[in-house]
Amino acid sequence: MQTDIDPRSLIGRKAFDREGAKIGTIDEVYLDDATGVPEWAAVRTGLFSRDVLVPLGPSELVDGTLRVPFDRALIKDAPDFGVGRHLSPEQELQLYHHYGLDAASPPPLPDHDFGRLAGSEET
Image (cartoon, rainbow, N blue to C red; front, top):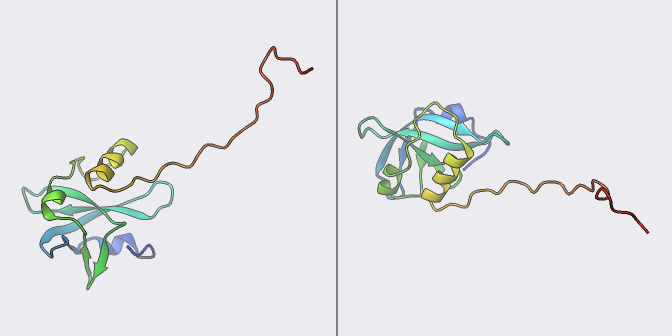
């Protein structure tokens, strides 16, 4: 997905699955906490007015619509965390697993040398 697109411009666009079947309309866009890059879109499906979260990374904008490269059935069965709330890292991991995507691993902690252990003497 283009990373230079304004996430607000996605709201109101139609979303379609990989076969071209309409999923619904984008209600909200979730940004990555660390980078601020659009990562998930909440799509109002029309099925009982439920919103589903779809990944923006593998999706693309085609003729003003969002094309999500997954089957509608898989999208419809995505975990429901509600809309308008922050996604926890655990919820985001569940979504990555649901869509069969690799979750970005957190960067390794810096290796610090905190000195010698107490009671150890250099000889």
